[in-house]
Image (tube, rainbow, N blue to C red; front, side, top):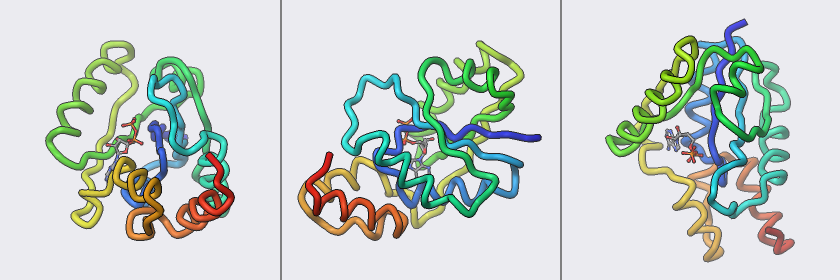
Length: 162
Ligand code: ADP
């Protein structure tokens, strides 16, 4: 079985992330969307809330699994027999950053390959940071996040949840 890990913060999950997942679906037997939990950044949207959103969003897609992990990405891949790491590229800044991480991962385990998909033009300026700013000021983020995520974010806003 060919498995890919799509690691990220997904704070929140955007149309850009969803686009990468959808376009990677024909390439792999399984895609594991994995929230890395050892980032020093404090989350804007609670981890479990975003995990629940994604589980709902992809409940009818048997190839997709949602999980969280801490520690090194390559160690998680090894433990779970995952051969590929999937990442998205928006611009040259992403490229430089992603290349460094990919080289680092490669130096730790040569068998795990990183696969990059370039963003589509319509998603090239979609970032979780922009979405967080919109939500923080009570704006409409529907152009930037999948509709189910937007619904969850609105519920969260109305309940004044973190
Ligand atoms: P991280 O904190 O690990 O960078 P993110 O949630 O910000 O996590 O991003 C996860 C992955 O999705 C990264 O590879 C990032 O480059 C990619 N990504 C984010 N936004 C987009 C987008 N609009 N189009 C394509 N890829 C994207």
